Length: 240
Ligand code: UDP
Image (cartoon, rainbow, N blue to C red; front, side, top):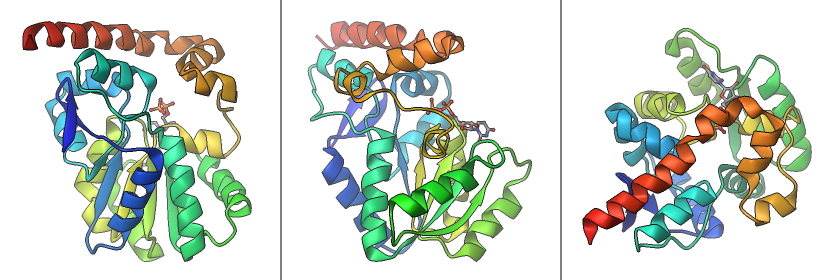
C-alpha cells in the first residue's frame, strides 16, 4: 500500500527493497517505470495534473529527499526512509552487472551520457551499455527507435522533472525496455560533471543545502521545499 503525501502515493521501502522490486519488474514482460519525486516534484504535481498522473502511474514511486520523509512524518504516516535516485540507480546497476543486463542512458547535454557510460562501465564490470543519447532532442520517434534497436533491458531517463515522468509514461512501452527510471541530474553526477555532496551532508539530510551553495540559482526551485512543508502541515490540520 502506498503512503500518500499531498496527492503523490509513495512506496514505503528501503533502498534494498526498492532495488529488488526494480529487478523483479525487469523480469516481467512489458514496460515498467520508476519515479523518484522530491518535494519540488510533489509541488509541481499539485499544479500539473498530467505530471501527477504520470508520477502516480509509475510502478515504483520512491521518496527521494529528506523533505518527503518530513512531510510524511508531519502527516502522521511516516515512511521507512529515503531512497535517493542515485542510491537506487547504483543498487540496480550492481545487480544488472551481475546478471549481464544492458542499460541505455538518455538525457543531459551532448557528450554527458557518453562520459557517464565510460565511467559506469569501469565501475560496474559486467554491465552492458546498450547506447546513449542526449536529452535535447526535438522528436521522440527517433529516440524511441534507437532504444528499441539497442535491445536495452533498462533505460535511465534523465530529462528533468516532470518532463522525464511524462516521457516515460508516453513512450515506455514503445522502447521495448522492461524498466525505465527517471533520474533527473544523475547523468551529470555519473559523468563527473557535477560532484555529489560529501557523505556528511548526505547523512545529515543536507544534500539540498550543498547543492544550493554550489549553484545558488537553484534558490527559486528550492523555495518549493518550505512551501511543501507548509502544505503538509495544512493538510494535517484538515485531516484532524
Ligand atoms: N535535461 C535534458 N533535457 C531537457 C532538460 C533538461 O536532458 O530538455 C537534463 C539536464 O541537462 C540535467 C537534467 O535533465 O542533466 C536535470 O537536472 P536537474 O538537476 O534539474 O534534475 P534534478 O535531479 O534536480 O531533478
